[in-house]
Amino acid sequence: MSSNFSSAGWNRRALFAAAGGGLLYRPVLAATRSTKVPAEEISRERRRMLQMNAYAIEAETPLDALTTYLTPNDLFFVRHHWNPMYPGAKTWSLTIDGEVERPLSLKLADLRRLPRTTVTCVLQCAGNGRALHTPIVPGVQWRYGAVGNARWTGVSVADLLKRAGAKSGARHLHTFGSDRPPAKVPPFHRSLDLEKAMGDAIVAYEMNGDPLPPLHGAPARLVVPGWAGVHWMKWLVRISPQADALTGFYMDTAYRYPNSPGEPGVPVPPAETHPVTELAVKSNITDFPSQASAGIPAIVRGFAFSGAPDIARVEVSDDEGATWSDAALDTRHDPHAWRLWSLRWTPRRTGRVSLSVRATDSRGSVQPKDAQWNPSGYLFNGWHSVQVEVRA
Image (cartoon, rainbow, N blue to C red; front, side, top):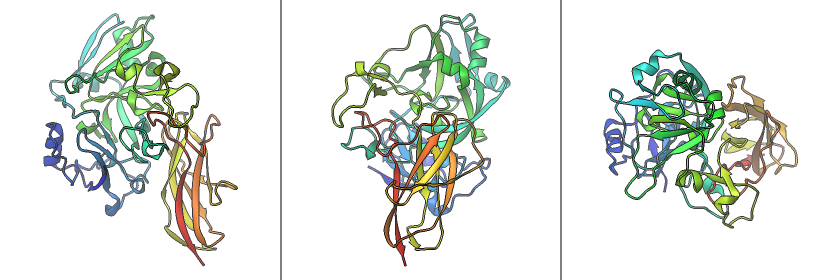
C-alpha cells in the first residue's frame, strides 16, 4: 500500500497519533521544517511522502524530491519495525556497559558537553528497492525512496568507549533501543563489528543542524556511515562492547544476505548467508524531461552512492547500455555521502527512449544491470531506467 502525503511537515495531531501507537496516520504529514538545511529548495508540489504502512509507520520519499545534497528532515524516509515508545529527552540516558573498565550512564546534556563529531552520509534501508525484485519477496514494498543523505552531529563511538575504557577482548558492539515489540515478537537488538563502530560510527543527537526528530530516533541514534540502516539503532539507550556477536532473530535469521548468488525464487538457508553490512554501489535518476525534442539538449540529474567512501563515475545510456556518456559529478562529496550528478543529454532519435544510469565507486565496483535476487530483497542496485518521449 502506498499513498501520497504533503510534507510541509508533520502536524501536531499526526505526530501525537504516531507517538501514541495508534493507527491515526493522517494524510497530511508534518514536522517543523528545518531552517538549517538548505541550499537548494524543493518545490511545493514535490514536497510529499509515500505512505507504505500505517502500523508500523513507514513512508518513502518520492525520487523527484531527492534532488538536494542534504535531504530535509521532513522529507526523510521513515522506517519503524513497530510503533515505538519515544523516550523523553529529560529522562533519557545512554548506558555504556559490558567489556569496559568504567561503566557509564550519560544524559543528553552530558553527551552535548563532549567533543562534537559531524558526518554527512547516506542512510538507506536494507530493503530499499525490494518491490523491484522478480519474483517478488515479502516485506515492506519499498521502491526507490527509502534513502536519504543527511548531516549527523553527535559524539564518536570511539570517544565514548575510550572514556568507558573498552577492554581489549571486545570485538562486537551490542546495541539496544527503547522501543518494545508486541507480545511474542523478538526484540530488535543488534550488534556490529567493534572495529567498524570505533572507526567512524557516532551517537547522533542532531540531524541537519536541528535536534534529532522523534521519528528518526531522538534523543539519540547510532549512525554507521557506509552501512545499511539496520545497524543505525534508533532511540538508542545502551551500547555494550562484548567478545561475541549478539544472537537472536534479527542477527541469526533476519538481515542476512546469501554468500553466493542463487536462482531467483529459491530459498537460502541462514547458514549460507552473512549479515547485511556495507551498502552496494547504486545510482538513481531523479529529474528528467518526460518529453524532449531530437537534437535539443535536455538536463538529466540524479544521485549515486556506495558503501565505499566515494563515487568515482556516473554514466548514462540512451541505447540500453550499448554506449555510455559520463555525467558531471557535483563537487560535494563527503565520505559515504551521495554524489549528485547531472548530464546535458541531446536526444539522437525520435520515439520512446529509455535512459539508464550506472555508477562506479571509488573501489572500482560497477553497478550491475540486474541486482542479485535474494529471499529478503535486500540491497537492490540494478540499473535505474526512465522513459522519455522524443519528438521531432
